[in-house]
Image (cartoon, rainbow, N blue to C red):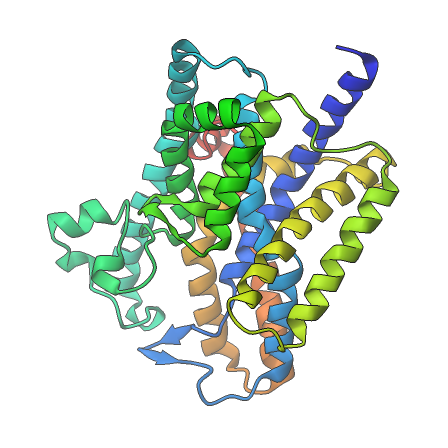
Length: 371
């Protein structure tokens, strides 16, 4: 490996470490929306006019948060193949065995934890529940089993496990199990495999079955392409490249905000903006790390899985509690409520993670997959 290659590899590692925490916060921001927040079966914002809040929430979700999950899939695909571009059955078995510890066990634990938490809340503090869902105490064996995979048959909502945000881990595990197929496609069809998957994704096709979504397949495959070809996904001091990606991202964003674009063109442009956003975030992070302005923080990077896994029900109960305490009604107060809820949820998660790691580092590692 040349000095330049070693420097690029080190920079990529730092970019990945640096992005873990802000991307986890981005996922929290996605689920902090109060537009669908319900208390006692009633939507709390139905009677409120909230143009300011809608703008701020839309700005956050458009500018940053929509790239969080695709980037996580991309990074996972890259790391899965980066050091083993020549795939084999032996390597595959070793990687799947490792993911049992880092993904499957935490996935099962965090879904079980939410089931237990819901049971407690429904029994002791029913006023903090939505009032729309089946009580855990009334669950059948089927309800319990599918809570770890897909509760939509019961709720009529999205195809999520009981700990909703963990659909990402579920889909990631599925695509990793199918990684030999991904490897074969990317190795032998090369960039044409990515183009084909991108067209399927752009068409709006959601996925092949619950647990195998198109975002997971596409962005994991893009990461795979970079990994097996050992091609760098960051470029040193490429301010021109960064500027171009920023301009393209801004142009598409402005077009989308005009509300003059109709479906399906809007959907295509929105996904194009997402791609530009992923490039922009990676290159911006790489640029400022190389300049010494940003530095990876090991504690924040280590906390990212905990923040991601705990925040789903946490932010819901935090928002319901704060709403009952303060009952914001003006546009400004609701907007502040939204921002404070995000800060409080992330801050509480950091505090809990710090305390658990302080008391029992081994347990902290166990529930976060050894991170």
